[in-house]
Length: 498
Image 1 (cartoon, rainbow, N blue to C red):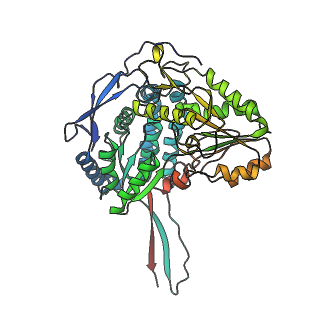
Image 2: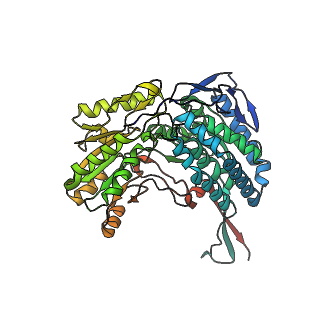
């Protein structure tokens, strides 16, 4: 495993150690309490910015601003105008994409090669939602009542949306929440993760530059237990769109009961990635490895339960371990870095704890298994890409979401028993199948209880294709037409004409 050397750090114009305010009603304001918090580079410990710390009072202000916009000028804006705003926002994101990529890398650690690689996805989402803005329509429905009664439906924006996002992909997560809100005519209060708030604040600036009216997009950074909880329970929020852990998702459902607000949840996973003996192993080795190691394993749909057919288990898992050992770990700003740091001290301690648990349970670390602290990595939160072999289904490392670069490799022999084992998890977000047998691919894809099944690939995403989970991985969908529907109410209209 190669380790990046120390590289000179150029101060990013938005991460220069200065103070960042929150966006409410088109204005940059301090927290009502005057409180602030710091955000640091997880690769170096360097202070990036001091940020206004929102709490319940700031959420109240932002929700009130969103409500005024939604019931006021924003309600008169035509679909074509909303479309143009999203297209303008896409132009601005494209023009500033290098800056946004660096900001994501600085604030949460992902390799710059990965954040730059999100270009097509980020721009594609904005332009897809722009297209959807003018494609919202109801239906005329012939009813069977006696007499002349005309019936039809209207699709209407749900209202004020509370959007709460995680830290593992700030740019695309922000767009995933803001885009459909603008397309449908909703107003949104975005609460970014406290670990990585800077990109969301910068997106707020670009929204204003794109001509999106004051109050339509508000950005309130703060902690989950204060700002996030206040947003989830707010009586004037019509919908919460949340991405994060299943435990927080459960709290949001409970908090939503006050006004029975609509909730969509994209939660965690413990996804099976299945390799059959007939697979193209040369393609499956890097595919299965990066299904977990990408973004240092900080991806909710990562294929962390690697099921490998017994007859190729030793060979394949050994090759995945060798692949992991060769990955270059280091500061995300180094273009040669393939694995960056974990986002925080807390996350590093969590992942390190699971590394200890795995070894105590009897799993064997063929690669990795510990923290990296030498040289340029000494001040960051780096964990080795780890491959555990001899993993049993009931081990904690095979059942609990680790959210780090940790593969649990599990052997299987009976394909029918495999499906039961693959589905034996409380989660159901992603899954993978590697085989050259087309019939087998279809059969297994149908049998897996997960929102996405990738065959001979992993983590393929497109703005037009829905993404979401089964079971404890949440409900609702993001991307695709289904995503837009999450932000709409359906109204039936009956007119007696004779």
